[in-house]
Structures are given as structure tokens and as C-alpha cells.
Image 1 (cartoon, rainbow, N blue to C red):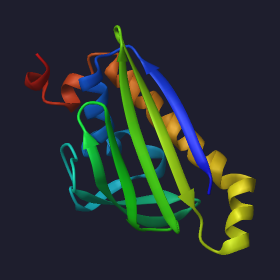
Image 2 (image 1 turned 180 degrees about the horizontal axis):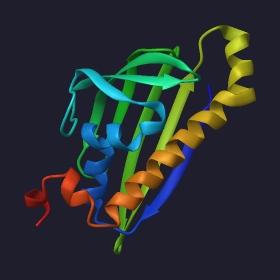
Image 3 (image 1 turned 90 degrees about the horizontal axis):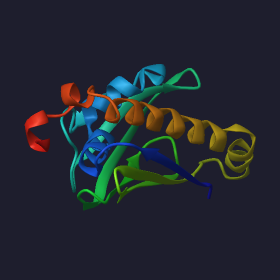
Amino acid sequence: MPIISVKTSINAPIAIVFDLARSIDFHQASTVSTNEKAIAGKTEGLISLNETVTWRAKHFGIYQNLEVKIVEFNKPNMFKDIMLNGAFKSMDHTHSFKQIKNTTEMQDLFSFESPLGLLGKIANHLFLKNYMRNFLINRNSEIKKVAESEEWKSVLNYNNYS
């Protein structure tokens, strides 16, 4: 089972980074390359414990649906989502946040198991693990860009952070 770990250092308060990472609206805006849309479950706002969202996205030229559920939630330190339905055999994604002075360290721990046995393992090795790592790195760079600017105020309800 491939495991991907990505750490991103962001010069912004932990509460802002945490909420950007769980914002349905921001996720859609930050993944234009895959045209991700929330089509069922929680489709806007901030996702929380025991809520689900079904994403429709284009990966490898094919539209796919991925239903995930938030199964652990400790604001503003971490949340974890797992796949309920989708292209993977299994998938879980832990999002961790740590405030270090004026910086938030955000870490993604993403593990997945591909379907199709040996063929899936070959796909993991040849391209899928790198594809998923790059997806996370690109998404995190969008979170970093918005959190470190004033843009976050237009995405999140500013009154909750003042």
C-alpha cells in the first residue's frame, strides 16, 4: 500500500490553514486542473466530523467519483477522511496541523490501495504514486498562497477569525 507524506510550511495562523484545508468551496477553486466538483453530501462550506462529500473529478482523462467521510476531527490539529466509494480499493488521508511560532506546519499522510492486484501495484510504481504526490503538492501550494495573503478572507467567514 503506497503511503505519501507531504509537509508544507505556511506563514499563517493554524485556524486559517485548517479551515482552508477542509473548505469544500476552496477545494473546488483550487483543483481547476481536475475540475473537481462536490456533487453529493456536503457540497459547500466547511466539512466536519461524520460528514461525507462525493467529488466528481477528471483524472487521466476520465471523470470519476470519490465519496469520502470525515472519521476523525480535532480542530485545529487534524482531520482524517476515508474513501467510502471510488476508484481505489481503499484510501485514507490524514491532514495534520502544528503551529510553530507564526508558521503552521501542514502535513498530509495519504495512503491508498489500488484495485486490480498486480496490475494496480505496477500502476502505483510506474505513475500513480507520483501523480497523487504532485496533486497534493499542487493543492497545498494553493492553500499556502491563499493563507499567506488576504485572499483567505474571501473564502472563509472573516468574522470567525478576528
